[in-house]
Each structure stands twice: as structure tokens, then as C-alpha cells.
Amino acid sequence: MNEQRKPGGFTIAYTAETPAEALVIRSLLESAGIHSPGPEMVNPLELPLPVGPCLNRLLDIIVAEPKLEEARKLIEEYTAGNSGDRCCGSSSDNPDEQ
Image (cartoon, rainbow, N blue to C red; front, side):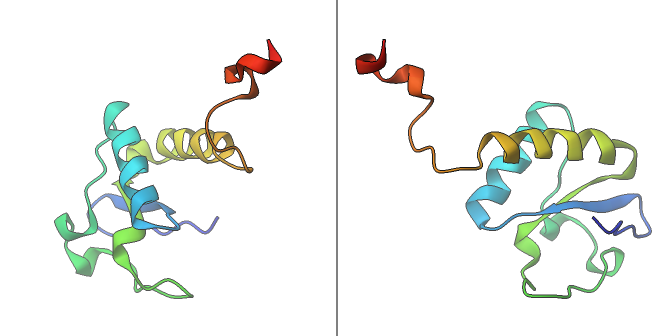
């Protein structure tokens, strides 16, 4: 992933696919003690210019640079656990398989 660093000590750790995913990831980081301000809380001049298919800042997950690696680890664990076609929990939740 390309490092998107900017003045002010904040960086974009991840770009979510949907506003709902962005909300969940920000909540996950906050619950782990990592402040993740929404883009409306950061001076837009501190952020790199948006490029690529997504120009929506609401999807950017922003963290302080000292917390970047910890945040990315949590986000990676979250996204890895939510990949695939699972709908409603693990297969052990199905009483027919017990």
C-alpha cells in the first residue's frame, strides 16, 4: 500500500469500500484506543489530493502517524475475518451441524 503521509501527523491508513464499512472500522479503531477522526475533522489541506476511482473522503480511515502500523494490523484482521461469503456467523452456529 502506498504511504499517504501529510503534515500534521495524520495519515490515511485505509480506504473503505462503503460508508458503512468506514463507520465500522473507525469504531473498531476507537474501541482499541486509536483515534480515527472523520475527514470532516481534519484540515483538508493536510490530506493528499484524492485520486483514482474513489474521490469520496468519507471512506478514508485517518489515524495519527504513530498509530499507523497498529491501525493497519487491526484493519487487516477485520477485513480478513470479513472476507468471503459468510452471512450469519460461523458454521458452528448451525445446530444441524452439531
